[in-house]
Length: 442
Ligand SMILES: CC(C)=CCC/C(C)=C/CC/C(C)=C/COP(=O)(O)OP(=O)(O)O
Ligand SMILES: [Zn+2]
Image (cartoon, rainbow, N blue to C red; front, side, top):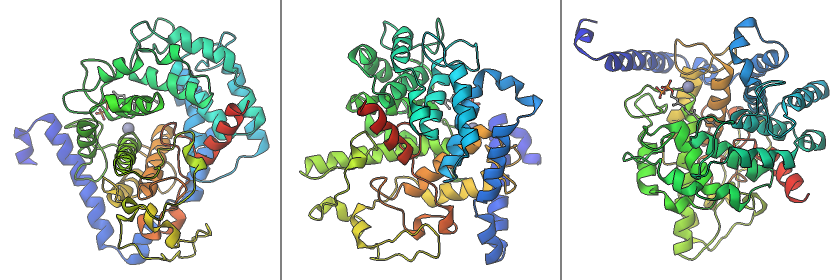
């Protein structure tokens, strides 16, 4: 410890985290194969118990999250959906009823019944109801009033404010546009000047900051990139420096950091890996356009309707050493890996298995929940974004969400496989498809 006295606080913190993480990895490698298998298991039952308990009852410490109750619903329900676990009817009814009481008479959702409408809690409420699914949940959203609320939050400069007289930032832009897109209430008034605002938040490092002049950060980078894709202006960003910045946020621990020279944190598994995959798909889409070929999914509205495999596409064979058949060791998912999928594979731009290892060995608590890093306590926010990011990492090898990963893409047994997410909204893909059908055929 003596040499630690001459280093900065940040260097010391980094040293201590690395020490913890490499200690965990060394212990893992020194253990028996059976123990290793156990250590990388997601422990589905424990995770589901932890989440279900939270949905039913929270202790007094949660009073500080009283203005974030739709977020608690989203973090828990989206995690449960990622794990492929169904909800019982009573629980669904209670969630729809509770969020109905958070919905404001002049549009949008507050943090709890009687609270002011806010874009972040509106996003959480809408994503929760999409995740619950079914006509009752989806029709409980007042789209006309929501559209009025979004217009009220729009600033003349092009950006959005989080709430009436609230702060303007890239989060507000993303939550407004994600809601407008999923509910099919997007229009020119909402998108006017928005691209200019987001472009002004891209920094000299390549990532996107919360507001002009601030530091590039993974959370805002996800929000900014997803917004630009949703409004069809993504090519206005400097995508090369953005990709360069994002991939270099994966550190020696194999997890991602949120910004340069900061510590690794499990939640960035989603905030940073999702932009990497989105950018990778944008690039392969662009290459295919240039070379005159097929369509690659970004997880946008029309994408999941297309299933055809373009056998003539030369760009589709970039992973030639993939075997025709990849054994599925009794995963119970009934997935057949056949040659149909070979050409729909890609090499992730980040270390996907390394990232899965960080999440499963350093963030996961085997008695339930996921956390930022070793020594921290698990919480519902980190559980949601570690699981979302784990899903992104598992599916990063496929060029679209319809192509299941191979056994070797998944760290641990294939039963660790999570549901794929829609990368622009972070809801489970089949729930997104249902909502899309509901709101776009209405
Ligand atoms: C959809 C939605 C509302 C998205 C929010 C995106 C998001 C996570 C933004 C991050 C906010 C932020 C500046 C965290 C820095 O915290 P810190 O300084 O404690 O952490 P750090 O050291 O890791 O940067
Ligand atoms: Zn975090």
